[in-house]
Image (cartoon, rainbow, N blue to C red):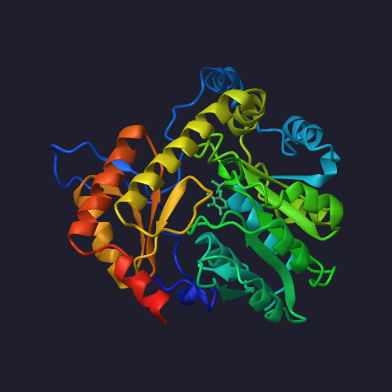
Length: 372
Ligand SMILES: *Cc1c(COP(=O)(O)O)cnc(C)c1O
């Protein structure tokens, strides 16, 4: 047994659970990974070429400031490059932001359930996560979040659309919220799924950034842009926050490959949005089929579905798994399923029908709630 001196609260730190690859239960079955909200399309040729062109040079360190990519992003949003923070995925962006604002014991507030990584990053930074339950519609409860603000609050994270429930907030709700948040507390709007959001009443993070000096917006190249394996994300932030984030960021955290792939992806945005549009159409097709089967799902504006199955969640996830779909179960709460290739999506509908036949759907739950 090793006897190394470790930080005292290590035991209390949870592990991140990545989306699982499908288990090999039945070799006859084609299997799909629908557990990590990835983009099913392979990289675009132009993006592959951009990456290939960097291969000659990776004996050298990357540009540590990511100056070219930062200036591209600054132009795109008409902000100063100092307002752009780059990270090794937007997970690292969130981590930088927490470590830039929080002292040990500071409070970081966010809705729950939301993105799995938030409480891990907060506790790893020795800050305290304040997790405010979602409302009955699986959406942000802004009144409860306002009530949870204390003089220890340093950062509030609003995930829109929310992972894993897919729910959206409205511009009106966010305005009302912002007008009550003290202006020295940073509000981060995490828009990892913004490209999939078709609601016109939903807030646009950058507009709030322009209006409020304490708003930051996080974006990622992992989902709509399909660069999950290269790790690059960014935030549009007040300059003071950007400087602080650069101090605590991982040096050389964004590789040369990732920087070039991200810049090439900005060049290919129209082509990429066509793929996203296809995924949105697929989402609507699957939702319509599930509704016809009797499912009562929350409206999703992301590239995944949320099955609020409560106590049946683990069992339902096993049924998905046994039919070749690795999904993301949240025990006692629900199951998240990513919209993927057309074939995978067909399979989702098939399994949803099987779940209804097995009495593992949520109609009964919904009826009971409505009767109250
Ligand atoms: C996937 C996801 C991210 C992005 O993660 P990367 O580190 O950029 O791959 C950020 N926020 C939320 C809510 C997500 O679901």
